[in-house]
Length: 167
Ligand code: ZN
Image (cartoon, rainbow, N blue to C red; front, side):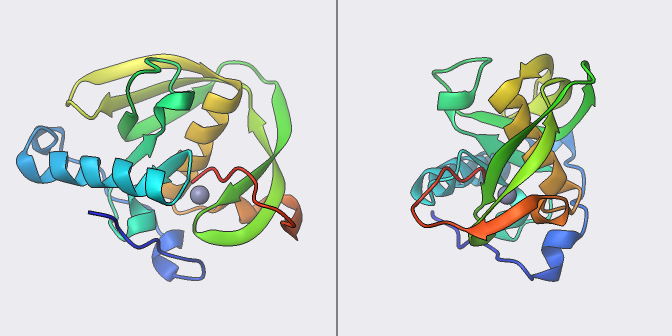
């Protein structure tokens, strides 16, 4: 099932999502939701997607396998993800967001972070993410905390041609 994307200025996008009870992850309902999230992410052409962007206010996001540095053969699902910076180094790069269509802007992100989450199979995971992978995760976790990249981005502009959209 393909979900419709929730667009700015929907107030829901600005509220924190609720943590997921890990005991529900392997249940049929959550597994179906994860599958539909991944399908929606590909159809809408995002490299990541947060549950709040399809109207479900839970701390869950997905990332395409192309940028999943843990396993490039599998789309990544992060549940209740949190991160801490490992390096103080930040980098500016352009981002877009499926919930803010047609706009792009530059935002500064940490280049190396440690991520703690539960995966789509209900297993606790902890890993280091760098560069673009780290950028996607920071963008998605912002969504789960009720933030959009446009709150802090610079040089926000309309795109003349299609560009990479984070989520
Ligand atoms: Zn986004």
